[in-house]
Length: 90
Image (cartoon, rainbow, N blue to C red; front, side):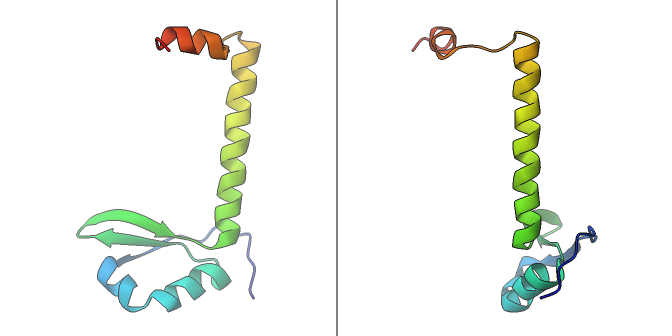
């Protein structure tokens, strides 16, 4: 299994072609670190990426959300559950 930390540009293909070669696409994403953009018509609609890339994305999202929460707390912009319930009439 080839592991790579370098970000590779995404390849693009139609949904029809992706369906016809799904197992190959899964192998390319999972073992070669490729990111494959799936298009329906001219519009990108989905991305297939390997688990390593997915886990890095989840980690980045967690870090970003933690940074936003930390900033909100420092700026005293944090609302309690009761404040939110009142604001939304719950």
